[in-house]
Image (cartoon, rainbow, N blue to C red):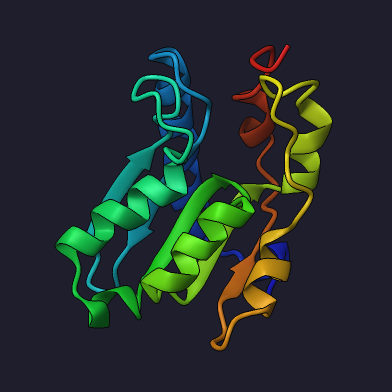
Length: 162
């Protein structure tokens, strides 16, 4: 499994797009998370958090983008795609990514760093379960690269969780 040293310039550009989507989600009243799936042929599918606006506790950005990507990309395209996300996927989202067949995840802000920013999550504590641990329990390899050194990934959360 990778780390920040395996993240290149293209990856950083995709992560910055995720952070922009997180900012847009926050502006419309949702939690500040954004994700994209990039297919090998360059097609991009975008997703934002919809927990508040759709009143859906499963409406995390990664789960939403996996659901959308599965409607526009076939299994072969998913199996060659990369999922980028503003913050490390939670256990639920890691499961969705795993079942989609997407082989690589790249994230900016780590789950541990997010926990430090979140004082209280609307009465529902964060699961302390890094995505690498979830993927390690599967029967196929999912490469995880992150966290990326992008201060704006934490900045999009500034003042949100207090």
